[in-house]
Length: 125
Length: 125
DNA sequence: CGGCATCCCATTCGATACTG
DNA sequence: CAGTATCGAATGGGATGCCG
Image 1 (cartoon, rainbow over the protein chains, first blue to last red):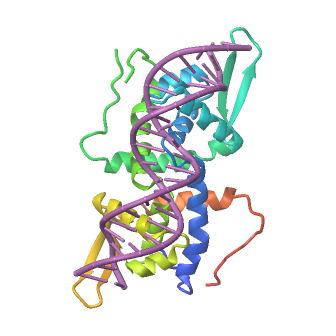
Image 2 (tube, rainbow over the protein chains, first blue to last red):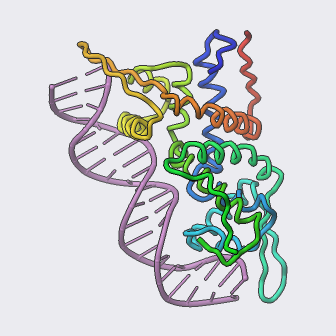
Image 3 (cartoon, rainbow over the protein chains, first blue to last red):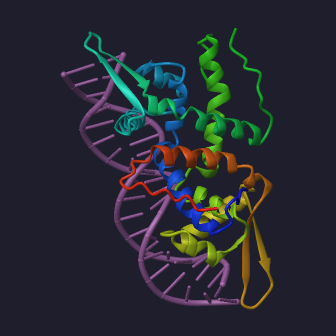
């Protein structure tokens, strides 16, 4: 809790804070976008690859989210004129710049999730 | 979850990352909760005070959000048996622990918002 | 003052079927 | 493979009225 400039601190928060968080959440504050970005942080991925790696998302919703994120400048869509078609999705620098946000959200979530966890990544051997 | 993939990095993000961000956003990933928390970071506030400070929120939604946040353990509701009634809302330690998340989201938002007008609200301190 | 209750709309979600 | 099309369900949110 910081109040370095106690003059008009509520106004400061109101003006400086809301718009920031609201804007950020307008870009990634929903069910799937953070997960999508999180995946793409490992590198570009093809559509089906993405779909399979995100458990529970429907095709329609995935496409919708990807289009919105593309319009928002978070990801780039790379189309290869091949047969069969190949499309890859890649984070833009803007999308990449969201990594710290996701990291801190992820860390908090893991810290405060109910029940166990801190699962020692068990990969099917 | 899928186990057919035995590569390490994707699985690492999948297990360590998603649940974290998804859980975090299930608590604050909507239109109003971040703003509410942001306000309460300055200290406890009364219901009406909160309502007036958050421009555009309806009573119904405000109450709904407050109740959810109370159930999630983010805020505490303090009822004073007076006439007229007085109710104050205060962040719990859990709620307070979200400050870094909001800070980073706010900072990112301010940095990347399309700013028609540069409004440097550097409150002189 | 601090709310619930009610009604209603808009957006989002999810599943399925189909296509270039 | 990488999407569209369609539809119905669920959820989020706004306006208003009433009440202890």
